[in-house]
Image 1 (cartoon, helix red, strand yellow):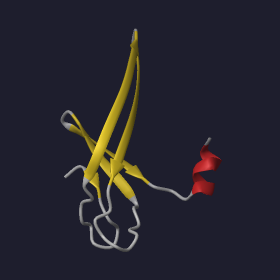
Image 2: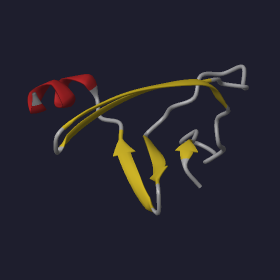
Image 3: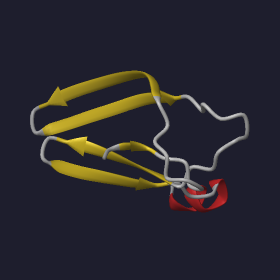
Image 4: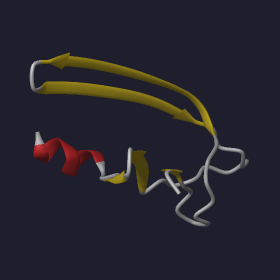
Length: 73
């Protein structure tokens, strides 16, 4: 199921709010999504990825450490 999950338990974290901005220009499309999740637990949770459903397709994201992500840009 799409969403954000805690790495230790694979429990889904509740989505608190979402905002989507889209811009289409000819054949180009830009989409920015801002998703805010809440942690119902007292202790911090570690998140390793996220999965989103886009129509009949699933898009999976992996969280990388900051240094590795900066090397890509």
